[in-house]
Amino acid sequence: MFYAAKFRALSSVAVAAFLCASAVSASAQPSDNLDKLGAFKTTGVTDIPTVPQTGRKVDAIKANLAKVKLPPGFKISLYALVPDARHIAVGPQGVVTFVGTRKNKVYAVTDRGKAGFAEEVKEFAPSVKFTIPNGVCFSKDGVLYIAEQNRVLSFPAAEFFYESPDIAVGQVVPQGELIPKEDESFNHTARVCRIGPDNKLYITLGQPFNVPAKDKLEGFAKAGIGGIIRMDQDGKNREVFAGGIRNSVGMDFNPKNGQLWFTDNQVDGMGDGIPPGELNRITQAGQNFGFPYYGGGKVRTVEYKADTPPANVVYPEVEMDAHAADLGMSFYTGKSFPAKYRGGIFSAQHGSWNRTEPVGARIMFTPLKADGSADKTEVFASGWLTSDGEYLGRPVDVEQLRDGSLLVSDDLAGALYRITYNGK
Image 1 (spheres, rainbow, N blue to C red):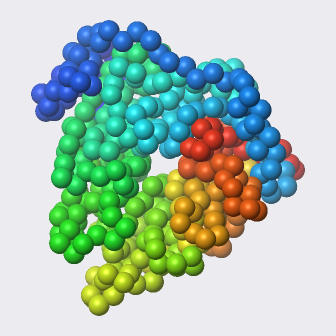
Image 2 (cartoon, rainbow, N blue to C red; image 1 turned 135 degrees about the vertical axis):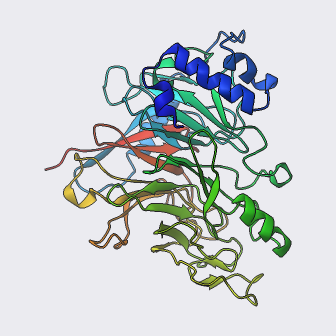
């Protein structure tokens, strides 16, 4: 059963029924206050920390944004200061935007006056203890999902109940059950999530190594590590949707045909120019995208060069610059940008860390052809990487606001930016 039926009217009876069911199926997490919140009891947490939106940092970021290059008619501005800002989930009612991090906090960002910038940024659900809550996504009926390192939580009507430190919460995947606990790692554990056109919850599971040892492959494939998994919104009927993926930290569904596209970060240490980063398209469940036999594109890894790759490996739709670190992506469905951008893909490049000449730290745009495949990718926004290799910012995710403008997160500057079009 999906949450839509549970929370359609936001009735306390329905919420209570759902959370009681969650409490029965999930282990208690007293350190997280989940047992208390599941029983609608207060936790004793009363403070909701806020993030000041004024000061010298604001002036410095605005000065850096003046260096960002965009196509004619476009403008970029500071939307909010959000520490460690990573992936973005815009509320379907347009009330609040939620921002995940790779640390232990999620932030609620509010533009109450619809002025084009946030008036308030505060911690979301401070009575809940998060661990790498990078992945945030919404269902159409307003349930916020947060995919952590090794757990998935749900927050019904988060847009309307976020004002309190205590908030209704359910466990979709209890702590320690998203991946085997023995495979927990500090590396490649920033999950992303989306609700698909089939109303299922999709989650990326990066594998923790640069290139894994062969004795790890069978266990990883079974758990969906190095792939994308999907499940019902209550956590049931989990299955591996796609495999052969090194570390995807960005995905979105094409609204025209329901196909899932995703970015993938490729193997390090093979040189400045190889292997390429990837933008991929899944046309059917069960497809394999080649890793670890391929380090990126059609470049074979040293470790698996002598091994036969799986049959029918799917190669990327777009090969991006090597080591640019392609992360968040989304299809543009708005109408405020010129026609050439409608239906295309905006994606963020975080920027290289191990390249002798840094590359990335920019927003890319990929239009689609009439047959649904990728056309030529171009740079849409750049300037966060200076000519002498200094990062002024590192874009992570791109998401569309209801007015058709585009939000960009930056975990180096700790900010959200808003891109608008004022041309003709």
